[in-house]
Image (cartoon, rainbow, N blue to C red; front, side, top):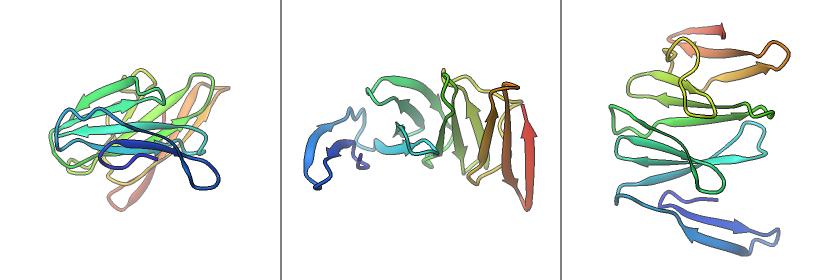
Length: 145
């Protein structure tokens, strides 16, 4: 688990703390979140410093870093499809846009989605194609890329 102040702790099945460390906090306003992948097998850490979102892997190494125009903390979703296919969805609720990034932090798709709600993402390894289901206004939309 990680608390919002960046204290990363591990527990055993008896509920005893087995390790604990304080993660780097560049500002006093820095906020951390643990973001599990949709299947619950692994996770990334999201660090938000004022207007900058930084995603970190399990080893606390930077995956990507992006600046946002608002100080509202964005929501992050993480999909690990295996075979080196990881996708990070970042929802900027103030702009009502959801950005889709690949495992190297590159924007994928045809740009951000006009959505402020969590999305559902599928990946076809056979076709190397993503299908995303999302809400925009009062419509449920599907996009393939």
